[in-house]
Length: 509
Image 1 (spheres, rainbow, N blue to C red):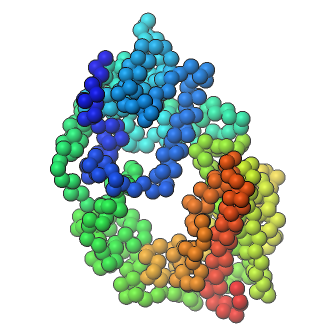
Image 2: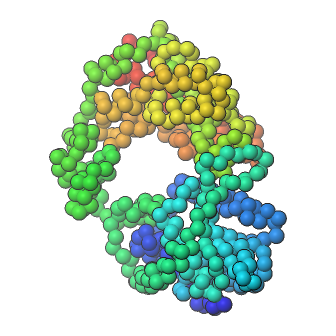
């Protein structure tokens, strides 16, 4: 086989760097010359962890007898990993993370399975992804994998991409059969040899540059991956007093084209006739530093919803690989709710549900929600699509509770719709998230004052820590308190927004 020497492979580009080049030449240059400037977001780091976990399960699925060999380049060293990969390709057992280097690039295969065809041993390669579909950039991924392996002399018969079937329902007990589905990409991947060679040559030329390429920030900074160098690149560019990205939902072709072709970075340079009503409102009131509030119509929107009223907010967790029987990959499983009830006399009561036992909280959550939402009265939420979808899913999972759960959905009123149509403060910077609207209306309430958990992402991480077997009882108690305070602020915030939009200054809430 055409294996590279140690000196040669040190000058090659990994598949990840080639994919970085495909996203943005500047990203590749920075990956090579200034990796210390990269800052991966918590979401990116979480996606790495998910991918690693799915990879471990794939090894069990493709090697149920446990006879395969795993190569770990991080502990073995790259040269040793490539050498052992070459040796194992002479065997007849599954190989995981086999390394290949040739043609100026190197790559590691998630799964290599031996196949005998016409008396000859060949190999089937499977790349494993934690997504639920074959994304566009995966085609580049497998094209690189196929090229490097074949250039290294591997008798590669086929290459497939395995991804998660999001309709799969867990049976529990560690049985993952059926979790992954495959799509054969052999014909396409094998046909792109010249294309991959060109990428390698161009990427190597970028890497040899003494100065970083000049590339303006844009859509490539988040697609197909969130780039860890985005903050660094933004700091290099002229800073706008009123950034154009404050405009909500930049979707029309005319507006996108104007911003991209004219290099617009400031609201002041966007023509009014390209903006819809909401975008124009953001522009005008941001530049004038004035508040927009259609109080009369906001009150009218809510006038028909009489007290008592309920204000609810959910916290959920999702797993790429379900840990509870009867759940699907990436299904949003509610583990907590906060509820405030505002009576006709203005009395405010709070209730909550939080399950940190590590068991599936779904049924207990649904029963507690029913018990605390009463039989009548509006149920206020902020962004109704989220809570109502979770309630419908609970109804589908627990048919005996479905009618009562759907009756709660029938009472839901979305305060976000009122906020979007009737209110805007320049401090919102084009966003109507409750964390942006609340400080403008009730500045004494601040999510930043909360300890530990201050947003939904933090809530999910806190939940995972709380249910971990290694978490102490003391730490679990701390997390419980933090989650209760965070979710409770979400629903109390809605009470205050309702009071403001309704013009109910007569109520002390």
